[in-house]
Length: 139
Ligand code: UDP
Ligand code: MG
Image 1 (cartoon, rainbow, N blue to C red):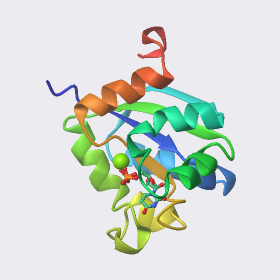
Image 2: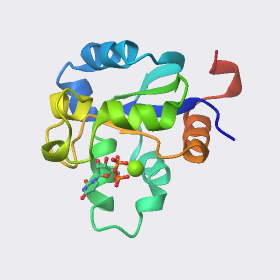
Image 3: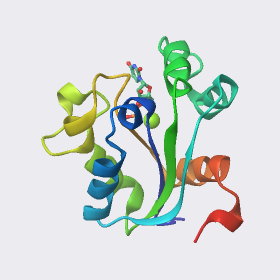
């Protein structure tokens, strides 16, 4: 069932660089409504749990280290066709391949430090949103 919600994180590189506000503005301009939002700092354990699906990938250790290296902004966003439209708004994983004007083209430093996360399915958006937020924090 399509929920019209997606889950995102503004990653430590973008928060550190002072790009939080500019990235939130892009999400707003893209037509996404904020359902839940917080600034937080993931422990290595929490980051490892969040990215457990990538456990066997060669970049897993680096990814966990990076995602726990500083504060992030986590959010649940709402829009028709949210998951697919948000992936379009952020662009390809590697900023070198990201379409002009996308959030990663504008703000990502590298394939690893790529400014934002976007859920890749309705099912994962729901799992990831529930990982970070209680039902009483979603409006
Ligand atoms: N990543 C990386 N090296 C790679 C591929 C991915 O460091 O070769 C990191 C990057 O931060 C990426 C995350 O792992 O956003 C999750 O990878 P995925 O393939 O799910 O990309 P995404 O869905 O974020 O575009
Ligand atoms: Mg992914």
